[in-house]
Image (cartoon, rainbow, N blue to C red; front, side, top):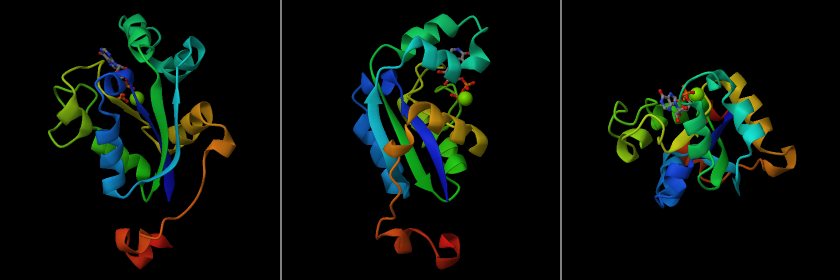
Length: 154
Ligand code: IDP
Ligand code: MG
C-alpha cells in the first residue's frame, strides 16, 4: 500500500467543491489517513513548487495558492500515487480528460483544483512537508475485503 499527498487548492475551496472532490477519492476506495485545513506560507510554497520558481507565472501561482486556506490530505491505497494522479488528470483543465477531477471541474492551467504527488518518492517528501508524523493516522477500514482481492492485500 502507498500513501500520497493531495491538496485541494483555493480554486476548489472557493468554489465550494471540497466535498465533491473528497467524495470521489472515497468512492474510489482510497482511505483518508490525514486531513487538515491550512493557509500556505511563502516558505512552504517556494519549497513545494521549487521546480517552478523561475517560471514567469510563479508570482501568480503563489497568489493563487494563497487565495484561501487549502485542505491537505494523506490518501492511502494500493498504488495510491498513480491512481490519484490518473484521477487528477492533465495539468491544464482544458486538456484534462472528462471524468478526471481537473477535466470535470477546471478550465485553467493554474486554477486546476487539486495537487497530487507525482511519484512515490515525492509523495514521501510532500507528506513530510505538509504533515507532522502524528497527524497521519494509519487504520484499515472493514470494507477493505470488498475493495481488494486477497492477493492485493498482502
Ligand atoms: P501538476 O500539478 O500537474 O503536477 P506541475 O507542472 O507540477 O503540474 O505544476 C504545478 C502547478 O503549477 C500546476 O498544478 C498549476 O497550478 C501551475 N502551473 C503549471 N504550469 C503552469 C502554466 O503554464 N501556467 C500557469 N500555471 C501553471
Ligand atoms: Mg507537479
